[in-house]
Length: 224
Image 1 (cartoon, rainbow, N blue to C red):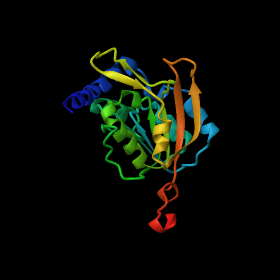
Image 2 (cartoon, rainbow, N blue to C red):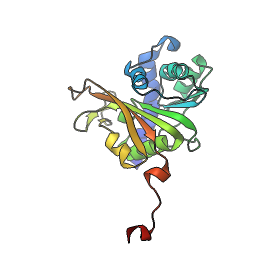
Image 3 (cartoon, rainbow, N blue to C red):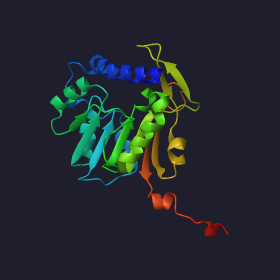
Image 4 (tube, rainbow, N blue to C red):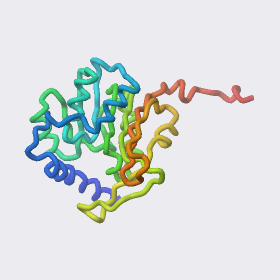
């Protein structure tokens, strides 16, 4: 557990380092919605959450949350990042949005608080000891939709992280894992570069099935 805790602390620091390497000096409001297939997934499967809420977990630099907040006409847009420095930087630019330095495996939001939860380019960074917690928290706090966009090779594998070689990042398809719980169903997906195992990515939109439908109550008499 000590090693996992150290890795969590490292990603908290690296969240700020990554932000500085890639976004220092840039106008965050002018960064376009990236990647383009985020918009395509909602064109393929239009959702109606106007007046609702979005949670973007691991949202740096905040631009995607900003664009989706307006595209989907939501009332509330919330983003999280491990680093409080990144949170402060985004809050200074996007005053109409909320930002918090919460880890993906422990989101202090109410169950079903958001209409849409987004995990884009996040799960590849998550220590495998915290993967199920992160997926569970994202599933818990959404009332309806969950979007996962991440690397998706044919066979799962890990890579050595360039900036700190004692840590790894991970590449795998999460659909089977998500649907195995019974109450998340993939309603649309978009693949990018799926012929290349290194850069293959998948954007999948899941819809929450009511617990009563997914796992109906049964009694012994139903099977006798």
